[in-house]
Length: 349
Ligand code: SF4
Ligand code: SF4
Image (spheres, protein in one colour):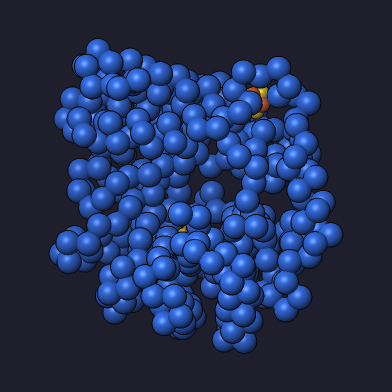
């Protein structure tokens, strides 16, 4: 079934100051007026897609700092669209507000909790405003969900400061047994050769661990990584099937675009700006000259996501070297992991 996604940036404020954060942390909070106009905008878009599944996500800053608007929007979408809508949210898990967590569980939210590993690793980057540790808070939040037998996804961010701890951190999070562990490299920074070599080694160690101790998860991660890194990328759907709406009511095509005027494709009062969408479509359809001869161009985010290119290199058509490295590291990891599946006799292709 087709999907239409709305991501509401309910606040840009945050109680943390993570070292790799890309959010402005301006005191911009969505209010009822903006929420009501956003609803009108969403309703129009949904009417144009009769049967699409609706995914509503709440983003921040720390979204639970504007719970009032999360609740308001959730009530509206649930009343209006019933089972056709599902909800998602990423939290840093530090506020420990149990009544908010209860609300998420009651409304079947898919919850991601950000945590980079055990205390030593997590607190390298995920710190409070005065630099204090966040670890104990997040662990208590996880314990709360676990007590209610509610699965959450753990989300790790990898950068130069923690890459050497990746496999140890992954195992630590995996052993919490609260749900799948997701991870992503902070793409907005450059890395040296050593970083990519270390990442490659750490990923292999992680897959070795899963192969030995949790074979079903080994298969799960191969599939998930294939989906993420080896699938043929289609043209960007931002502004067509996916809308990010910030606290002021500006609309953007994706997460990395929010807050940058040059990527704004409309607002909730006047709708999508056709002229800007045409400009973005033209850019999205162009091929990167530097990727012309690359065998990986159909699967690589560097060819697909022009906004990441612009944020990283300053040029829509010039991918960051991170894309090439990432494509290489993950393709190789998947190839090796699948080979082991074949040897084990459980690979169907
Ligand atoms: S919790 Fe998220 S929004 Fe807050 S500082 Fe960390 S990365 Fe930024
Ligand atoms: S960014 Fe690199 S790996 Fe990706 S398509 Fe371009 S040249 Fe190939």
